[in-house]
Length: 499
Image (cartoon, rainbow, N blue to C red; front, side, top):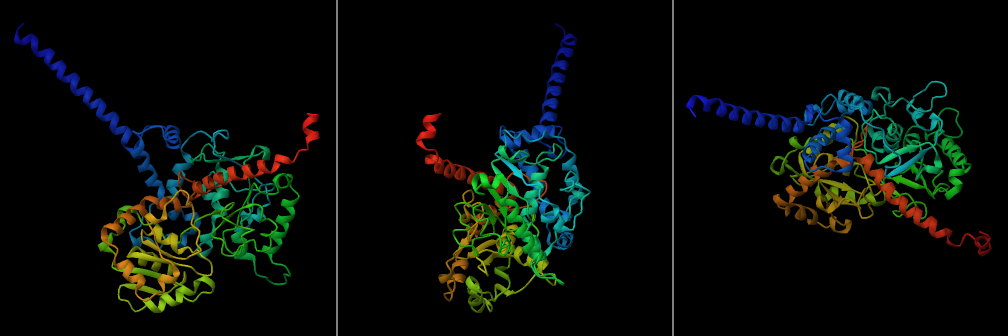
């Protein structure tokens, strides 16, 4: 064969080879480029929920990272806090656009038969929930429109925000049947209580306490106390409560002083709490109740902008109330031990006078952050430290931690007994003896687990909202076990024979 006749075949061979290479490369590029992926969102959701693909794992992690910082940026929650964060190198993108784009993505509605938890929510009047946020619906409208984030009533900022857990759980339930809202299918709201695993009581107890526990004007009974009385009367009259004595009911009372008048009467229910500091064991205990994280007040530091060991000049940081009663007495003793140490920042502080911004800067510049017992065993400071990637030093002997059946806190926290902490030199010698390599491992773990402590709307896989529902599902099996066990001898022998 002549040279002329062989040229075209070689040319075609090379052309086909190059074309195939370009086709394969472009396909891989399109699949991996998460920001403009042509893969339908419903497919992504299916993969994310079922974990069926190894190939998509890096892509999904990337998407989760993009969603991770929504809670701290959402303007509908607390615009006042958001504006302080641009100085800190924390992520502060246009969150409202992100939420809108999330809402516009089309997906399938959650299937109640496939959800981990089916929840029935009482249609309580708005005065028990969003009415406390000064929301007024139209006639016969119980709930706000949650399809559009801009229509959702804003939750008040400052210290109110740390106990806003019932707000996020209620929003999640309201959106669970909306096919346009992208969220995990861990929990689904059902409208028939006989189909439910859990009965949710949508009372914003913490907000009611914060805003309405004091008498105003000519009031003889506070609004908060009145709402609690009405709630008890309402629940006691419901068939759902009578069926299991309230044991399958879920009530959020995250503020330690919320539900003070009603908690004893409703103590058979599951509570979502910050800790057990102000509850007798017969009313609240780890066997039946859920410990939920505070909603942190500082902004979450972006992983790529988190200061490393040598970039954090402060060894140990604490800013807050120093003189506390009960278990918080250790604060005062530590203050006098540590206040003059050159690499320790230990001072009084509050949310006033730009306090949140100062705390954000201080924690983000510190290697270790003190979490001390106050009037109760827990405080929001632990979750502020986690959001700042500052290794928490927990000195609170009675503390209960959220999601501890899932998280090993010893991987990213230092625990010190109170009796040891107040020994002269003990705490500083311990912390100064921790090597950079050890600290860095804990710092990396903090960046890995921080999303478990984020409250956001819509909820995302593994965030605080999703984790609370998973914790409730775990408790549900225990409730069922005890309920069935109790029924062993409920029926008499004659009843059995009759059948």
